[in-house]
Length: 446
Image (cartoon, rainbow, N blue to C red):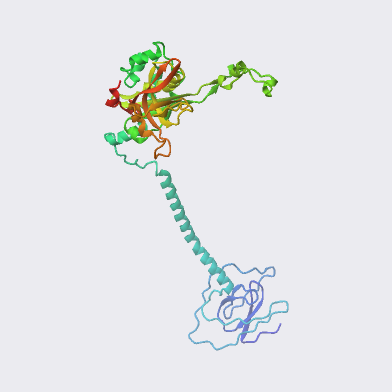
């Protein structure tokens, strides 16, 4: 190895054992090794560095720079310009590089641009993490507050203030005519149907004391059984608001026709009768009729009227509809027999072959069993004819029939061979006792 010039000296890197040439008058300086990049400090003037051990293995540079070594201050006089020393490296070593002269005290190595950008990105990301954590905490607190408010809103909130209307007669009356009457009606109906004698039923009947004799005569003084029409089977029927304000209420029992299967044994007709070769005789056609094995439908109208003593049941229309009194009266003529009925009445066409001059024909029907009807001829110039003239539509400007509710007295007149059904007295429009009242003129004709 050639000897070094007098103006230069050499030392070896403690990391890679690379030879480094530095100016002879260079004070101790810390800088990266030109061979391996490790941080090293040059020896002072007159110092001879100890060669590294043979067994020493070069180690990579530490992740963090070592503690800075304070260098003695430079002399006040600027050093003479010295050309950078060339570093002679063997062929197997890296090319020689020139160690730049120191510019001042020992300083840390400069970071590469990529490393600086990476560190800047890490710094920005590390700065965003706390912000994101704060936003997340605020969001969780907000959601928690909303959940708490929604879950606790209906638990500890005071109920809305309700105006006490117990002393307001108008409100109480409106509630009663809307639904309040229903409980009273069911209770009354239960008590009436459970009663088994006239005396027990009188307290629940409208004008019960005045009708006591009539009711006793109707039931014949025996035990009254109304279990076939239980109160729970009645349904509410909403009358008009005007009727309810007048204290009129209504319930209906409606049972469709049913078959009694234990008696449903119809005789079989012969093949000749089935195929129309022979006619069925009277006995076969009678006992084989399906209607003979069907139970009659049962429809009952229960009208209630509000009185000073509470609700009362109108017995007359209850008994008329349940026991089909109108049908029995019409189908079993008996001269001189009379009866008062609540009916639907409408003008009708006369029966063919029974047109009578100076009369108009009217049809009366039971309000619950509308198939129970009868046609009746009424003289136009009679008191009844004048009362019914307001519903005449045949030969007038009215284009369709007018049906009204009325209370009439029917009777059978004529002789036993040819009885005729008549309206002997027109009592009133609507049902008597339920909005209808006898007029003085009609009452005087009794």
